[in-house]
Length: 331
Image (cartoon, rainbow, N blue to C red; front, top):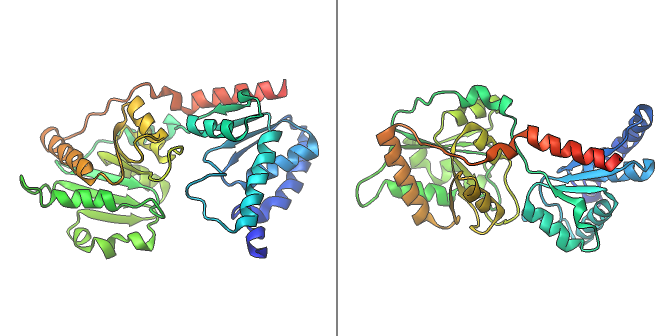
């Protein structure tokens, strides 16, 4: 219990007191007008809350993911879970504005805090800075007729690659003839139970699957630029959108998302015409789509992408909204 409390609310917990002490000095020395914090790590929100209490400066808190109710939360005991709920309650009620990265997350706050003014809860989506991706987005593909499929991110817990790999494997024994003009690239940490070498050694040996492990960000972007299809694996939650989606959008990639069909990610995929959405267990549907994409790549040499109205995810637009919140909070 002592150990868990030292690392509460997360691994940044040991920085809590030093950050509060240093933050208070900075606020006084530089006459700071407003305190803004984003999470996770949730420690940053706790630091901001105490600085708000110590200085009486307006507080804006930003949730890039759910804290309470996060489907990937691993309980550290009833006492710590109650402490987490209590802290979020205090932070939310003390803030002038609370921003969420999705509409369902905002709605979740409205349900849990019905006594708060609904106008204090706003949506600021994640996004991309086109400048960071311009050099990579313009890179030509050089993969011949091979459909290059990439997943950029960690595989752990509920984020299982099994349905995607099983769907690809089924193409090799397709009744109308084997389809093998594809290559799957995994970039990022892979939990031991999902080890590609252990579970799909034959596909790795044949070169159809490549587990590149952890790569520098620039290298990840380069490999992503060289791909045709970018995969999202987001099961078990209806209110979260993985941040890698915006990297995929910035790169102009055709996207396949494995996620609940009635969740916010699926809704975004359909609204902005980003690609295709499948239930994570729908291996038949995933297989059929991959076969179709392989045929298109073989015939046309590329996949056409036609997004709709994605300008709202440009950080220039999001920053302007945030600036407006700042001005309202200090006025």
